[in-house]
Length: 260
Image (cartoon, rainbow, N blue to C red; front, side, top):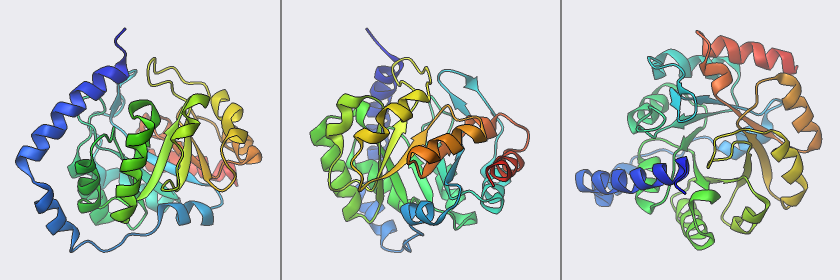
């Protein structure tokens, strides 16, 4: 049976090939030579008292448009000012309404570490992430084999990109490898797009202690963050809760105030 994830992966394969035909890896490597190393995504979370990773997301496959006219320059600086430990930029166009230029713009106006959030399946996307300003990249276990996860994580580290590995099921724990910096539990099932924060509580003790742990998706209250902190999570990726408001930066600031 076809799932939303299957559809995304099929579209992503076509997108990657189109991108390769327009800009070569050699061109991206040339861009990378002039890139200054950005602040560490992981270190920023370790130093933070709240660990909020604020996400810039215009739409989702399950909810449709959340903030169709959202502009990077009108939101990202205020995420930084309001106290985001890191910022997640969705660069998928077909299903999330983002693009790589969002990452480029964000990199030019903030020093806050940036995560390229996308369905990464090819090393070409790692070169893109590095060339366009990301500090870290997301690898989704549900979209990759164990071997491919390790291959991409190792390549990302060679490019001085930090790796956030996203899991949803206990049987995906084998995707964890020595090249991973952070393990994230996605509370959203990528096959059905249903969210359940209980997933994070169920899996926290299954993740090896040496990895920094974050909880992603379905987080809408400060109390949920406090409860997740109590069991060992250090980072919390929140997007829709902020992006569905008229002023995401203000919503983030108020959320962080509730945590203090």
